[in-house]
Length: 91
Image (cartoon, rainbow, N blue to C red; front, side, top):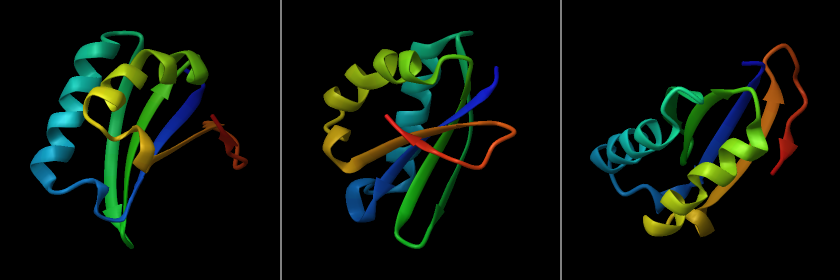
């Protein structure tokens, strides 16, 4: 797996830590062995969830229905980069 996919949620779009963990659990369940939900970080009014994958755009399409169902799609910016790179691409 060569890419890091980042889900970046703005401001108050993630109401609490339990909501973050529930979303991560849903992503892990959906992705199975196709990608790894790596970690998250919280700070400066932003919540990031990091996913390690071989196919970032396909991975996003796979988890998009979860973001829609949880009403988080409008509040997320999705980017990816090669693990050994610095430049991010917006999905």
